[in-house]
Length: 284
Image (cartoon, rainbow, N blue to C red; front, side):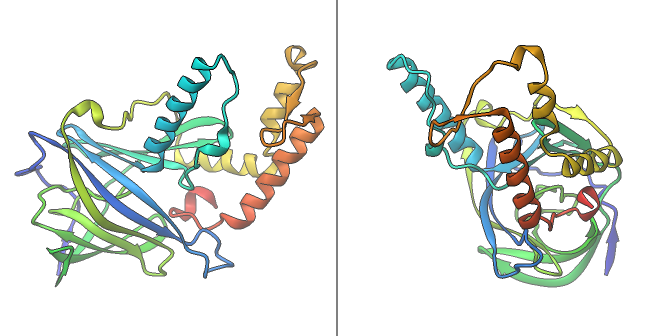
């Protein structure tokens, strides 16, 4: 048994002259009271010589559909964008890492605001001697405690990248699978592809507001208390006093009170169903 502290040189990284997308299937139980309901979503880990970016694969499909719908609207002189054609991601986070320091940042949106949290400290791994084959790769077992959960990972020395899904990194090879010991969150490698041009990578340079974990938790609890606060403030301004709103699906006019009530009801339903986050302390 060997204790590692995630401090490695980036040796023999095979993407030094090319970019790769490693695809993972993310399985998660977001409702702790309904453990039979397992959500799944494909996630991309874009890797270049400068770092990586982890995000839902649906974001690329969404951006493509947005572009197609806008081009269609422009051609027909229409200003209507049919959001029903655009499948929304269930995953509301993105992770960026910078090589070779592996500085890691958690990106998410809360109450229509882009927030970012820089990870402090390195993940400490326990590497075990146990091995098995995963997707034709020889994989080795490692464990860690992170974000209030105990994790079991399998990494491969066949791919010399010290990275993996979500914030996980620092092992002497790519992490192929990792899950917590309760089986609530699992990332499983399903394939990869080469990106011919660096421009094909997802742009991680978003206009985010950086906050501490403590500040984020405070903002999260404020949002839970009053999820429609921003709408109320917006609609109290003189510029919005006479604005007429319409239901996105039916086109029926809505009052400001209807809009606020709808936001509060949707948020309350979401809080019930989504209560089992990866990092417990962030959303406690």
